[in-house]
Image 1 (tube, rainbow, N blue to C red):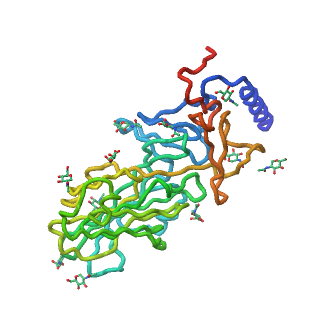
Image 2 (cartoon, rainbow, N blue to C red):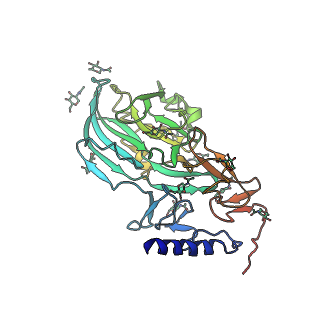
Image 3 (spheres, rainbow, N blue to C red):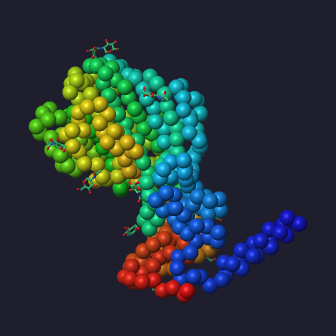
Length: 350
Ligand SMILES: *[C@@H]1O[C@H](CO)[C@@H](O)[C@H](O)[C@H]1NC(C)=O
Ligand SMILES: *[C@@H]1O[C@H](CO)[C@@H](O)[C@H](O)[C@H]1NC(C)=O
Ligand SMILES: *[C@@H]1O[C@H](CO)[C@@H](O)[C@H](O)[C@H]1NC(C)=O
Ligand SMILES: *[C@@H]1O[C@H](CO)[C@@H](O)[C@H](O)[C@H]1NC(C)=O
Ligand SMILES: *[C@@H]1O[C@H](CO)[C@@H](O)[C@H](O)[C@H]1NC(C)=O
Ligand SMILES: *[C@@H]1O[C@H](CO)[C@@H](O)[C@H](O)[C@H]1NC(C)=O
Ligand SMILES: *[C@@H]1O[C@H](CO)[C@@H](O)[C@H](O)[C@H]1NC(C)=O
Ligand SMILES: *[C@@H]1O[C@H](CO)[C@@H](O)[C@H](O)[C@H]1NC(C)=O
Ligand SMILES: *[C@@H]1O[C@H](CO)[C@@H](O)[C@H](O)[C@H]1NC(C)=O
Ligand SMILES: *[C@@H]1O[C@H](CO)[C@@H](O)[C@H](O)[C@H]1NC(C)=O
Ligand SMILES: *[C@@H]1O[C@H](CO)[C@@H](O)[C@H](O)[C@H]1NC(C)=O
């Protein structure tokens, strides 16, 4: 009986799907097109309502904030003052931040934990025509309380294994800011260090220049490229003494969208000046792809449903992404989503 009902329902849905497509971009029946969370547009394959997103693309809209804030669906927030053994084992997407203490005399020793927070990643925006999203990432900091003692704040991100997201290697960079900073990039609190480090030693502040970190490299700011295909990260510092702690108490490190951060000598001074300046965090670019399938995708179910679109393999058996053909722009993941870029008015049948 249930089976019959399901078949009837499927037949009904097919009947709807076979109706001639509207001229305007349309999304799934019964789904807002496009959905909004506050002022953030949530285009398909992302969605808020059940049934309105592809697997892995669920967005939680938290309307207790004003304006509301959007998060990539993950486990509920977790907070504690001791690492639980399973903090890392969630296979959802999350950001983990920890507060620690260390002394410059214990170079290489683990830091002592004060407390940690695990929370879903907050969405800044969705760039569906580039198969990218931007999320807010926290800035890691290492602040001295005297010549040897430090308080640390470290940020780590885990992207769901075999989920849609990876860190965009082309569009992000590791940035370090400080009078004497060695920023490093590891794969997790427990895992291997990647070889990517960035260091800056500023002997005299008169040498420092404001502006792009590229111009200031080594003079209060440094940046380093990232390896491709990364799904877990930890941004931390090399432990060290800080004899200049009274003038330069804090160093910072962040994974951030390339060319977004502009170095300013004022960021070298004061306590946590940089995270206070960007208190929501800094933009980090994630690539997304549909993992189960590949191009060409004429066979079976596929996500590139718009006309005038192309399918692009994401590489390394990582699935595929959809693009609008050259001269077209919009959302290749919805019917009629790709529209000619030079038309000033859209044709409308009603
Ligand atoms: C949303 O509004 C906030 C300020 O309320 C603004 O900073 C942000 O850029 C806006 N985001 C978008 C996607 O328009
Ligand atoms: C830091 O300073 C302490 C005491 O001044 C010294 O014993 C220690 O070797 C120094 N550590 C490093 C990594 O330089
Ligand atoms: C966690 O530790 C930081 C740094 O010591 C502190 O500022 C913060 O208040 C602590 N959070 C809670 C909820 O105890
Ligand atoms: C993609 O969409 C954004 C925002 O809607 C727009 O600014 C941009 O020109 C579009 N095209 C490309 C290729 O990024
Ligand atoms: C730094 O502070 C810690 C704890 O407050 C203290 O034990 C240590 O002796 C101090 N070190 C220096 C070099 O002042
Ligand atoms: C992601 O994580 C999984 C398991 O943690 C790993 O096997 C995989 O190689 C990682 N990389 C990508 C791109 O999925
Ligand atoms: C950089 O900009 C800050 C803030 O505008 C200013 O106080 C500082 O003097 C500038 N530094 C240099 C080297 O121009
Ligand atoms: C940094 O400077 C560039 C170029 O002037 C600008 O586009 C960008 O918005 C600046 N970044 C911030 C965070 O203000
Ligand atoms: C991929 O996953 C989606 C959602 O889970 C499913 O609807 C679709 O049939 C799958 N496609 C393939 C080719 O496995
Ligand atoms: C699609 O189907 C054709 C014919 O059935 C087959 O030759 C081709 O290999 C299939 N392609 C994929 C990607 O499965
Ligand atoms: C592609 O765009 C052209 C003109 O913009 C339109 O006439 C055509 O129907 C579109 N093709 C598909 C498959 O939607």
